[in-house]
Image 1 (tube, rainbow, N blue to C red):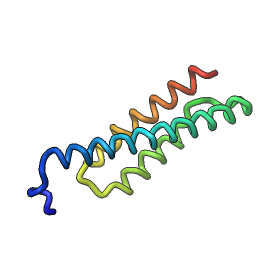
Image 2: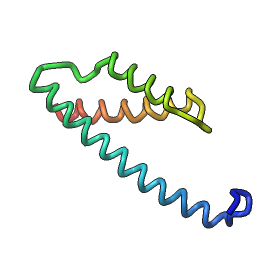
Image 3: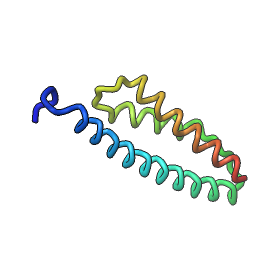
Image 4: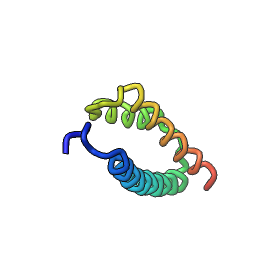
Length: 92
């Protein structure tokens, strides 16, 4: 069905399903970040790695095909990275 002809309720259900998938993926990413945090702790490395964060932000910006702008994608990923880093610090 063309996007303009789909019922609103159907589109909202699709968004709800995607939200659940996104949440699972974000939590999976956070678990992996906590694994990295444990490795860093054993090696006595700092939580924040500016080079890695810059790489992640560049990577998602270059991979982005829209409709979100590069700035919007960076904003979303900065929030995810920040929250993962905060969680990692709480575990130390």
